[in-house]
Length: 481
Image 1 (cartoon, rainbow, N blue to C red):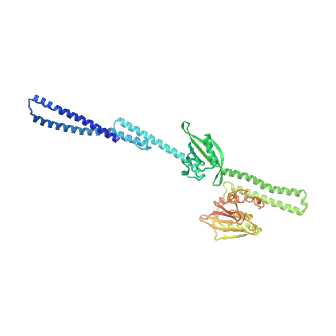
Image 2: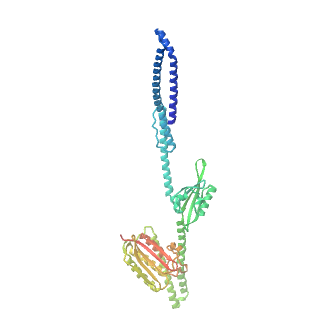
Image 3: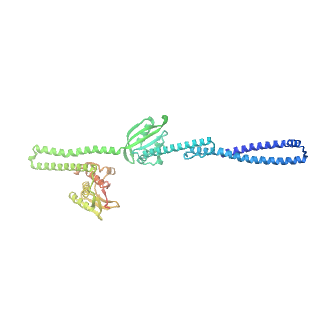
């Protein structure tokens, strides 16, 4: 715009100078006729020298007047051009800023009514664009917040199979980063094969599709409920597909636990009831007449009744603990006193297998817990260690602490637990050694009760085990502050 103004100014000056030059030339040519006419009217006579002298003076005056006129015309032209072109230049710069996305730009041009109207129109357009930009930013932020905070994993893939949108749940679920995903073809991300097949199916059919798939992530089997649908823009233009995944692994696991629970309870109840019924029928058929057989059968019936009673008591206890609102009576408690009481209760069982306790207690630790429930926790753990340990071995008991928890360790020299089974040992009725499933005399609910009681104390329980060497159970209970 500035260059255009300069060109316009130069052109105008050239035209003005030309006009003035022509005008000067015409006046110069007319000068002799003017002198002759003047002399004739005034009866004056001028010699050649006088005429030339007057001509020089006249030419000087004409040149001076032309110069002054030229300067004045330049000043006036510059002012007019500036008043006309500066507002247009300002409006033009504002329009360029708007095209760049700077909707805060405003025009401040002054001038004729048409210039002012043009300025006002540009400013109204800028305000409207700024409001639209704000609305778009708000909508983008809402969409981003919704996508990031939804409970399901989401990924959107454009028509070129390139990932355009992905949320945190998806990245965390597959241990990926945004830089590894966004802008890349989904087939290069290393996603599970089943998920890639699902996405391919939605791409090929361009129809909504829902399926439950099983994927392996970090050597762990997970179950996903996956929904895919095509993304259609304005005028029916196909933009790609969106995939939403919900992790249902916990639901599948709980459903399996429920099925196992029903099956195990039925089996555990059927075994003692069958024994009691069978030996009772035998006695009723006349076996009671043999005193030795009578005492033997009654002893079996008594043991099976005790086993049935223990199972029912553990089921009731577990049901009570799992109820909503269950709590323990928290108070300062000595871990050393808890351990002493648990040892007293389990010593008879220990003596039966000719085992011993190795105690490693440097100092007592005070925790916040329910004294009786803590005894129940460690009685179950010690009993479990005794049950799955060979004779003539030792159970090691330790008391430690860290900055947050008091720690009791119960370590045995038993059969150990496979790494793949450690996560399941706290399930109800889950038994590591299937061959010894019921010969141990336990109900299979002890560790499930222990886990719930530890969690009720806001504590933790960790398991370290080596097959053939033994297992160490670590229980962490919050310290007394």
